[in-house]
Length: 301
Length: 301
Image (cartoon, rainbow over all chains, first blue to last red):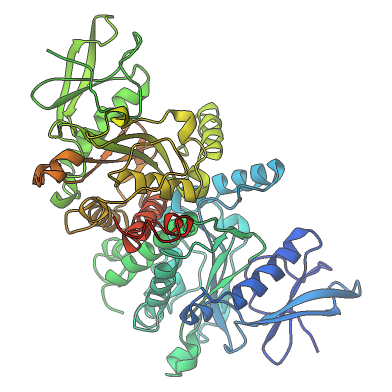
């Protein structure tokens, strides 16, 4: 039985009669093929990526496993529709905190239509893409079970639009804090999970650095409008379960094009920008703004 | 006595009655201040760059030394005009080979006027900037003195427009070859100087990698439309003089803006792309195309 995923934070969603992704109980994610070129492009990408001997094995784990395509009933009740069958990267988590970061200051590719380029460029300019080299496309922060009013927070697109460097620092800090979620911009995230989620040999930073190494040399693909997804499970981490640890996955490959002999400098630049934010938070585990705003009372957590 | 420089390969030149840079015999380069914001922006950049304690000493050597501004007679005979007084980075070379690479897939900055953005974007799209993350803005290849017909080659803008990855690989190979210059695209560069110019602890690659490290962390400046200049002197290298060695300098800071807390992902991405080309040439000192085209006869040089 296919159902609507709980943990999707960005992209087309299967709500209000719209066609969107579905999941099953076996850990599969069914992504409806878009009718224009995007659907077939994404299938082509997964096929060529998985069969290309130049892609090192160490990199495969950063991509959802691809199980081909399958015709299943669409989420909107419109009947049978072809879907990509992918690994449901959230399936191993009970209640994950999720962040979707669309990488690259430019989301359009050179061969696109003028209309498409204009649409993307306008969006790149009103979001943080041009300034920061990425934009936060989606976010779900899971709170502590102790506070039932505060179970989770999933900001809407409008909230995530046009974030400054300071805003992104705050959101990434909230992402690894126990005293969140909260819309309250003045609240001070305690960064209680920063070492477990961003740090360590299996943490987000190490995973992003391994991806960076590949992006410094790979000239096969240019990934436009592709996202880095970061997930972890707060409660599992609190209970000392290793399964709650942070995972990084790349998703959304409808706009991947041939690298034509050059590295993907647009993706790499944005990735390095995200890495810098995360490194800074790791290097300064206490939020400096909180310390100064609270006369040092927040210096312990 | 000020004179017109011999080794300028890009930018406004002091020829045909146009205002352009001048040099003196003491190693100074006089760059006329442009009347619009660009002139004052470049002065402001040099002043703030040189006084900013966050800029590490190890990075200063990649920028021309700044000696302030001075009013001197303009090259076009129009009378007194304010000039930036900079280190003439070519002054220590007798007859340098020079390459000017404008870094970044995007040469416009967010706060620019719509007209300026459109002009830059159009140029980024018809040159290699969007695809490769940089474009070759100027090039002067000095030949071997033995062949007097072939003393130097300085391709025009049209030739350098819209280079593919393969074209850039060939130009960079020619840049470090003894059997150049030549317009002949089929000619096989011998890459005789590759180890001395691109390689080694003082070579171009190491210098670019040091710059890269800084760009991975610095959030002070975003360098739009700025170039990496690479220079070396073939004859000095042939005569075993250390003074002929390769130098990397950043030039042209009329469009530097505040980094606003993010790294310069646009510059960093393009820089990494250039680094990949140079690393590839170093890793394969014989041009593979030449070897296959000549049944291996070019395998020795």
